Amino acid sequence: MSDLICRFAPSPNGFLHLGHAYSALMNARFSRDHDGLLLLRIENIDRERSKPRFEQALREDLAWLGLDWPRPERRQSDFFGAYRTILDGLVGRGLAYPCFCTRGAIAAGIADKPDWPRDPDGSPLYSGSCRELSPRRRAERLAAGEKFTLRLDMARALAEVAAPLSYREFFEGETAQAMTARPDLWGDVVIGRRDVPASYHLACVHDDFAQGITDVLRGLDLEPATGLHVLLQKLFGYPTPDYRHHRLVLDAEGKKLAKSKSSIPLRELRASGVTARRVKDELSERMDVRW
Ligand code: GLU
Image (cartoon, rainbow, N blue to C red; front, side, top):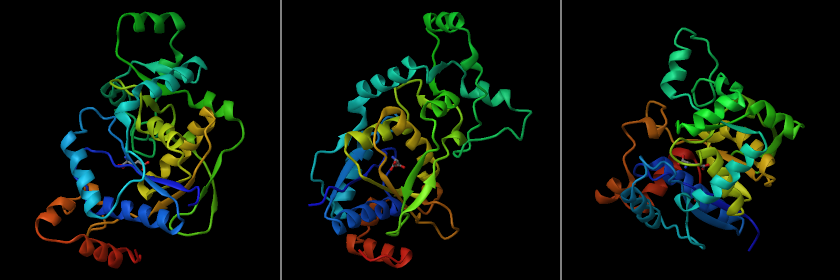
């Protein structure tokens, strides 16, 4: 057994489709080839979209694909206390601040500015108005019970880590490429949501550390988030894993499956008599990989 640990980290807000199967199988193959461990993590911080029925379905779908887990799964909703502690730590260090702006107000503020810069997810970069609130005004608004998100103060965070950040990226190959992290592209990104003391980025980085992940193998759609994750790792004193972003399974029109009508759930394929072997063969052919 090597010390390699990777993870598959689905969000239970829908049924798994071929794209998820590819990601899970890529992780399974990688951990097997390197005699490592593959862990399961349920990314369910979104309290509205995450549903127990999707969680149960994904366990069944993954078992059907032949995956099993050497350690108990990690469910993010069990760790809100830990996320709150690290968020409080960032606030205490002056690296995060409460933001009272609603999404609607932010959108309205840039309505007449079509060229306003956007982050890699397409959200407008935050202007920073709540960063500039006086301590007194901020305290008053908090005391009045106004709802807020927590945003990273990107300029301060970058100043704290000082040196340019880098990480190793392998894509689907075996040769490391030295990458320069670009967390600045995210601006003052939300790291604590209004309803829960975490965001995808914060919970993901903390859990990769908590689960001892050495290699993050996930879809290319998450590659732009990596620079931000590397910054958070540095701020928390966590090691940076190696990254391996894989190609996405696309539909006939070249669109990402999640956004496509042709993303038939694995469980529907199964109900119609398709075997797990057939799914693996199909992916093997479409993506030119061998399991
Ligand atoms: N939960 C994310 C998703 O389902 C994956 C996050 C990750 O692998 O970092 O897209």
